[in-house]
Length: 127
Image 1 (spheres, rainbow, N blue to C red):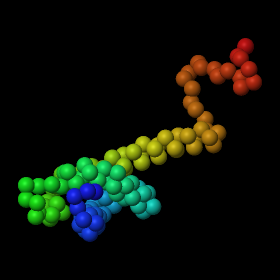
Image 2 (cartoon, rainbow, N blue to C red; image 1 turned 30 degrees about the vertical axis):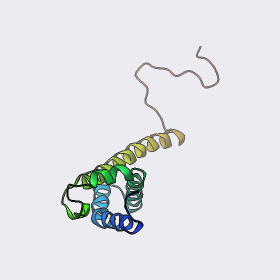
Image 3 (tube, helix red, strand yellow; image 1 turned 90 degrees about the vertical axis):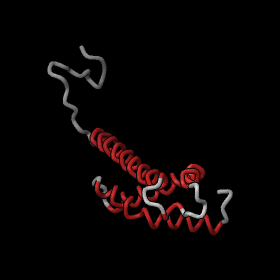
Image 4 (cartoon, rainbow, N blue to C red; image 1 turned 30 degrees about the horizontal axis):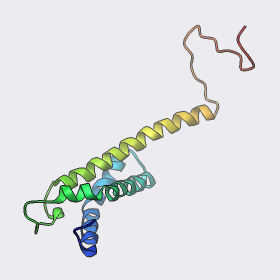
């Protein structure tokens, strides 16, 4: 986070969180996630931003260095944050579907076989 004082970084971070928290929460809950899951999505979104802070800062630069990035509407930073939140929701839902399928099989679920298919006996090869 070079090039910015610690106070400026903290101020930018706090401004971005204040500006986007409700939108991130809305993206998660609109997708059907509950409050705890939405909280995870929010944290993952901010983690991704911290991991890619250099990129986010580059997107926030304008020709007017006195203009704070959160004072502009629909900046690339805004779009990046919201896109990241949507991506995290999509990943969560994919993982949830995978986990539910795994749980089904782990709980002794039945798999419907194609007509005429006979599974081999668990004790050895079919005869």
